[in-house]
Image 1 (cartoon, each protein chain N blue to C red):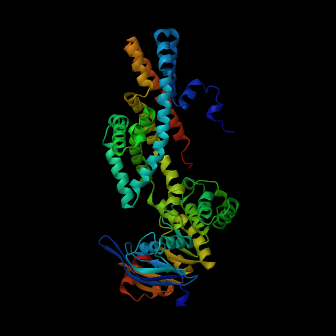
Image 2 (spheres, rainbow over the protein chains, first blue to last red):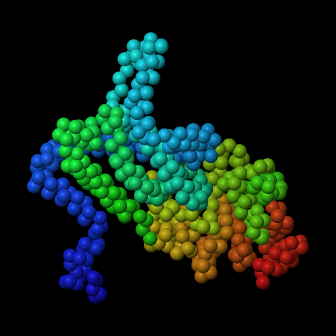
Image 3 (tube, chains in turn orange, green):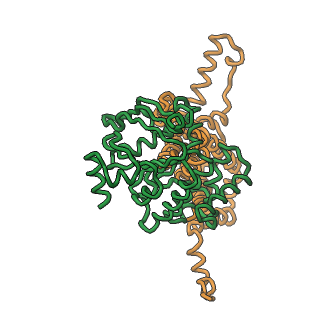
Length: 269
Length: 245
């Protein structure tokens, strides 16, 4: 019987390290750094962590909720961009081009400050009590702003994925009697999603980082909590080292998760 | 005989931009007939085939398949379920196993239960000679095996007509015969077939009629033995001398 490499008694630590994704090592180092800092220098690092920890949750759930919506809205944008129907194609293209051309920070400010003001003005003009006293919820507006912005980017990712699938796949599905949507759902999208998993993962990590912008629209995310701590304690170096490390832990883990997903979604050949 | 024609093509014209790809094609195909289409590349033979299940829209003329005119979206989908198509590049679904390639459309379009669809799928895989590949993915198979799966996939819909668009052109020479054998068996069972190919052996063995197309027109048609040995038209002679030599 032929012996495999793993039967070798010398098959040890170094080979195992090589086989596992080496980037996990970086995640471990950053996590270890946070643990060391909070353990051996609890003042100020444990204090900072205790203060900003609720901000971590805000950052995580606004990002995850927004990204879930981005995946859905972006799919419709991508289908519109690849549609042969001129109206659908036109609507999707204008949406993508306009939204891509405005910075996310400006969009968030519009949603939180300009949009509610407009609603109030209209409420007063039309004498509608509910609109005149409208008050925007910061979290809702932050999620809305991020979703609408990132769904435009995601539309382009979906479009690229759909266009990367050979024309023959759609033709084969149609020739079997499937209509456009059946062919999309059962044949084109399952293949396109595998192609675009890496850029989708990229978008998630980028959104996680860009979510720090919601701190300007009164959302108490990690960045805003860091600013609040610094304003009260005047220790900028330690505060922002901690905040940066916490972001790094989240983004590195997210990036590893994407790599894992990619590996487990390849076709067998 | 004319009234029994399962495919009725009348005066089809098709343009690709400035190129006049089909210039008034008239053609009737009877039930159970095996029609071979040959001709130089760019002569419009693939385009004609693709018009029959409306993968290609035509600009003028009419096509009636099994009594259904190709005019509305509903009718086009109805015709497509009755017309199986086999492509040069196989076009199997790479994300599905071989068996699921065969069951997908059965379940969505024919609304068959999983067990029934799989039973039909396995029967067809036995028929094309590769039941042991049911759980493989298409990219794990050779070209010839993939094309046989593609034929089985089309047959799983119980089509009344099968269209073959250069089914062996993308295959290595040693794999051509295994695909032709499946097509020969199908012809013997009485399937109505339209085949674009330059496999003259298949033509002599199975075809009832051979058609030579050139420049978007039908130049000449006759039983294959007559067309190949005694062509009347100069363009047929010129083409055959290149292919047969």
